[in-house]
Image (cartoon, rainbow, N blue to C red; front, top):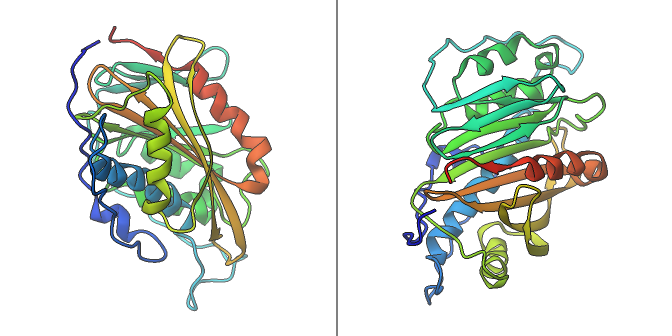
Length: 284
């Protein structure tokens, strides 16, 4: 792996920011640069991952003109615009799906019951034909990612297990690759600094914990666990739980963001932890 890396830089996407149900405040710029990374630009990258995760769960908010919940709402599947993402999804004999990012140099396993899709790849369009896609929350989640940049947003994963879609909130995981950055994972100083930045990026967010760990495949990870109050698609007040994992790749940083309803945390987080444990670096 390369020994010298450039400071983190992630260009904020106005598309993602405007998909929130309410406007986000401006990003905060640290007055003194951190010794291991550009904290102001990393602030933007973290907010991007959080925003993308929340946006997918708030697209189905009811409006005065929305059809009653028991009335079928016709939808139109987007016209295919296939892209070449430099990655693959392969069904495994144990029921898991192997995601291999050949450009990023890593792979991971997605558990059964979770839907992995890459933006505008064939499985994205196939997802609209699934029985679960009859739910507007699933349709809206898929529609919300269609115009995102697949060079940055490498994979989205949706929890389609029975009983896990509550109040129109769809538990999801997104993978963002910042190709020009790095984060220090040699000790907990870097991840603690990230944890301190995160609340300034997302008002009302409270960091619960942060840590450095090494998974079963000897991949070092940084983790931040946080909570934030919000409203579900039906207007119900809920608390969302987010777990972000940071991994240094051969080139850049991979940020994996898991977002779920706190009421589902015990049922969904073990699946995410298993996914993180399965990550292997393939470029070394």
